[in-house]
Image (cartoon, rainbow, N blue to C red; front, side):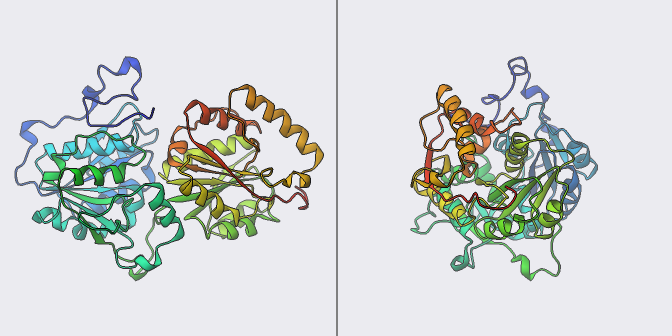
Length: 445
């Protein structure tokens, strides 16, 4: 069963046993002397290891609000110090609780300060700080209780494929008294009226926080609206931060300069961002990935497939993506199958989709030496109690948000794929397979 998240003191499920009793005592408390009935707009920024961008973000946000609250989710870097130096009020959690708890806690504190409205700024909204007045306006006047900043309100005919997939993954609610869905319900720039803040003590599994908030406030007969965000192409210069990342494709790579470019180019038409784990390559792998605009994590030495997967899942969690697709960088996997896996993730309503080499009898193309190793790992996976699937060792997989949030790898070798399946079984995640074709005739693979 998935854990639920709600406002303190009811919720401290992620705390260690010895921390539970004093969990709330570690949070910054708002006293009566702090409450200002004339307080206007407060910004809430949940943060985890954001020391590089956060200082600039806080300084810019302060130009549009009366107070900034940063909820530091037990960062391991200098995030809280940077936030405080930039002028934010900092709430420091001593246990990593996740973005849902951090956000709800920050909004609770904004309410206790006596604000008229609060605006949430997530990591994918840093480029839209200048839109805060537009998003918050209706909540300050009382004309709306929740206003969502939408990237697509005026351009619904051109919503990216990745956003359409995310919409369906989230099982999105409809607008109040309207048959149309919200255009950008996953947006992490949104404003709350004082009336909405008073009603935010509710439970959520944390996996679908944005849409859970919409559904909850609608159930309280509150008005939920959208406000169009500025088209970034209309700004005088490009922002310093990257656009929203909802679907991430990731590929471990070791000396893959020959095929990497084609794989990246073929993949990115289905996703928002491509991540390459350069696992100690001695060729031009890293340079090619960076030239093509991929995010790159570089290992000084070859750490192995499992270590690359650890970095991939960690980065996916940091980016709060809705879906993650992992494929090989060496050209063996067909990038056009990325869309097939994402489509299955949505239509079959599952948490993991495996691209199988065996569903359509494609195993005749697999070299004999590979079949032997695969059978050994397949057997070990079945012994561990994983449900019988046709291709447990396939490295071409798509993961939904529930899977991304719970998979935590320990191994660094090729058995990491089996370890993932065991964790999928342990967490009762839903799994499906779709047929794929794999090439084994590529040079040096």
